[in-house]
Image 1 (cartoon, rainbow, N blue to C red):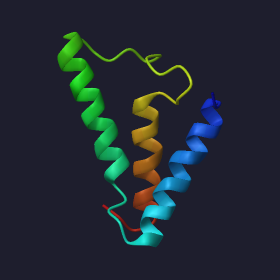
Image 2 (image 1 turned 45 degrees about the vertical axis):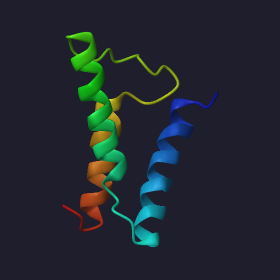
Image 3 (image 1 turned 90 degrees about the vertical axis):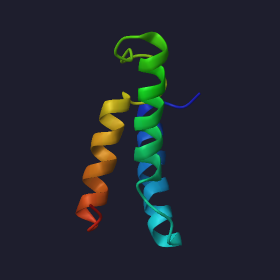
Length: 75
C-alpha cells in the first residue's frame, strides 16, 4: 500500500506523462468524476470521503489535477 502523498505524486506524474505522450490529460479527472457519480448513484448519498483510505480524497484529486492542467494551458 502506498501513502496518500505517494498516490498524489502518481496522479500528478500520470497527468504530466499523458500530456507529453499526446493523450487527453483530463482522462483521470473524468474517470474520478465518473467513479464518484457511480458510487453516489449506487449508495444513494454522497461518496464517503474515506472510501479509498490510501488515496487522496477524490474531490481533492479532481481539484489539484484540474489546477495542474489549467496551469499547463488545458481547460
